[in-house]
Length: 436
Ligand SMILES: Cc1cc2nc3c(=O)[nH]c(=O)nc-3n(C[C@H](O)[C@H](O)[C@H](O)COP(=O)(O)OP(=O)(O)OC[C@H]3O[C@@H](n4cnc5c(N)ncnc54)[C@H](O)[C@@H]3O)c2cc1C
Image (cartoon, rainbow, N blue to C red; front, side, top):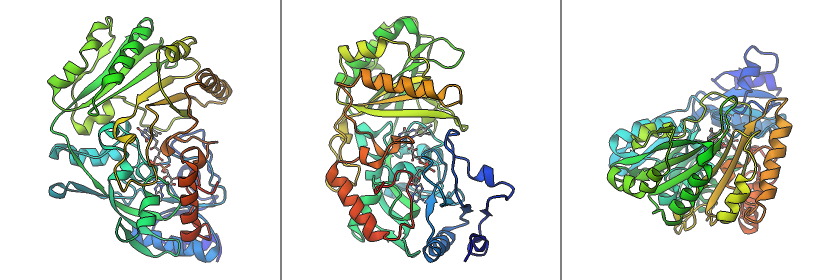
């Protein structure tokens, strides 16, 4: 069978090199990532996914699922890229506190459906991110200090295995695969739907406060104080921003799972920092969670680098602030800890993240900025080397990173064993393969 036969295998659209729309269909969300794939297949439904996997198995080809391309690594040479965007059902079962999502659904859809019912899922900062890729890789979001990794809120997965057979995976039906799929990424099966636990949110308080650059030291000091004593319901992130053509700024991003008055009390010390340029603190409807950081929704050419930090103190802040943030656009630190450091029994492959902070360095990846962006990221990480653990959560790996940077030796060995047992012919390729 040739690759042209793929058109007769699935009901959905197939794009082959030379077809109108092929280039567009191969485009990742991050425009710096090229995807030299053999074909793009858009599944019309779960049966299409199974038919595609059986075709790949028969013809010795590899399938890489990619709903949105937010996590694209470029490691897709010669594969069939599987677009799952049409599998985008979202069904909230409020009385069970469960949401069932198709493999192509985005977090914004879940928040819009669950929020009005007083519930939330464990979304990250951007509503355009896909639920499946985020959750299979762990998923660190606003409520992770309270409720842990999104992957540990998975209750069941509908999958297609490497023989093209559909199956429902739960803790009882297939404990090994259930463990691997909760944090180990997309290397073990194609998921067609997920069932996730939802959590009550009677009220949420938060927002973003922005100050001019000369307040940076005060804002960092306040960040250290707030995060030293924050309850698990409170998450605080700090950003040094330098958008192109704008002056440098510093911001605090805030989310408190609870009453507005309590949230305002907890954050009162922020009021002592004078001269805020803007302050959006207030009650935040769950459906508007993405408004806190207002990240870009359109594809961008970006180069990111993430590092977990073993701690943060006044000396680390001195190092961070000794040099300008440019040519980076954003230097972000997220406060972690809480439930992320203490996952319950039965946690998946994400395990525990004991580092209390996550550093994120974002710059533009245009031809004339890419080298300077990478050099600056290397410089910041080298300056902070006493605080950098060398590990990073799977969802924030960047092109050039490997899965081994996310897992301890024992977890990686177990994931590799499961990969070899469940997908011996390498029908599936995750963005960061566990065998890579
Ligand atoms: C703007 C932005 C904001 C972000 N914010 C956060 C955040 O707050 N917290 C956080 O933890 N991460 C965050 N991320 C990272 C994000 O979680 C990862 O990039 C994640 O992989 C995106 O999932 P996706 O499905 O949208 O992306 P895709 O690139 O489409 O998929 C990523 C990978 O998931 C796997 N996968 C997806 N669907 C399937 C499937 N049906 N079956 C099997 N495997 C599948 C594949 O291996 C695929 O390569 C952010 C990324 C961006 C660009």
